[in-house]
Length: 124
Image (cartoon, rainbow, N blue to C red; front, side, top):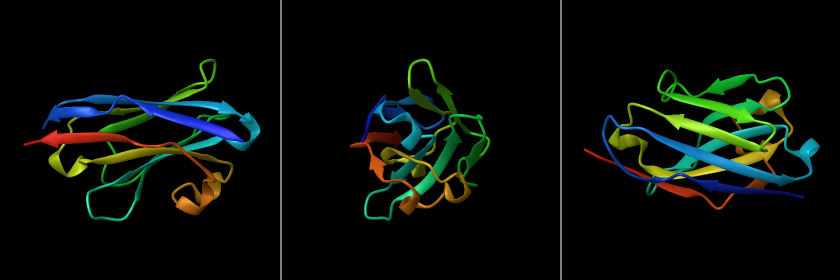
């Protein structure tokens, strides 16, 4: 089993920054790939970014590329999502998820383990 706990959400003005954290515990081999997803109000959950914790490879959705950065601290079993130049359309509940399938890192079905989510609200 893998447990994930997100933190760092909040309210920020457009153009501001936030850093989300995803603390993981449990079976490390089952959580080599960590992804961030978000679910805007009334919309489907969508892929944001992913990282391979073993080799550090990263992947981003086009909507956040150049503004968001995913990173990991393996000593702390934590994955971060640094979000800069935030826009009102970034408002969503942000979830981190863990799995093993780097080849399909953008797909929700890749991730058997999910956190409870953290709210990010960007005001205009």
